Image (cartoon, rainbow, N blue to C red; front, side, top):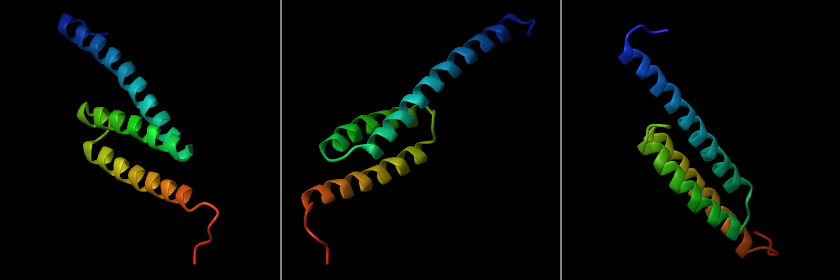
Length: 94
């Protein structure tokens, strides 16, 4: 336990920020999971929510900004393929 008042304050702040970061990281992971499991229009809506959370997490250094950009890119590709599957459902690919 710190003896200096400022060090004690930093511990309190760090503990509070750690819980906030944990909450935001958990929300982000859940949003990413929703995009991966959703289909069609649900995937588009879930993708929009996930993009907001990824941008915020990247800005606040919860995850690295390049990691956020990489995940956004991969999700966009995934949602694009899901949209393509729905538009040609019932047809066989040659």
